[in-house]
Length: 121
Image (tube, rainbow, N blue to C red):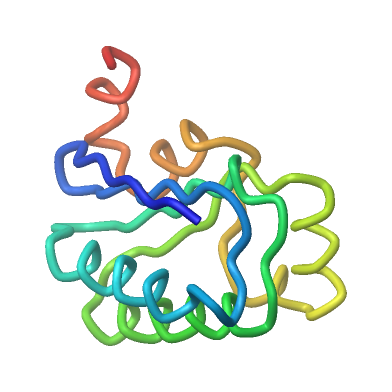
């Protein structure tokens, strides 16, 4: 798994690539928490490059979501592949997280002030 981060106004987009499982879920959680600390308004997790997520990875997302809520920041997950969406659906995490078809949709919903910057990039 590799993780990258981009800042757009008050939003931080965290992009993950590869598998998120027990071997790297702590690194994933740490990256999400760091993004949350730096975000003014929202953290958006771009999952377009994730081909699998285990329960340990889902736990990392849940910890970050709880922290975001406690800090009054928005948190969304975008661009799930069909397999990862199925995992979210089976675990019913699709009912817990704000899910978006694409990163642009998430930016528009969670940090609309950053949309112009997103479109320009």
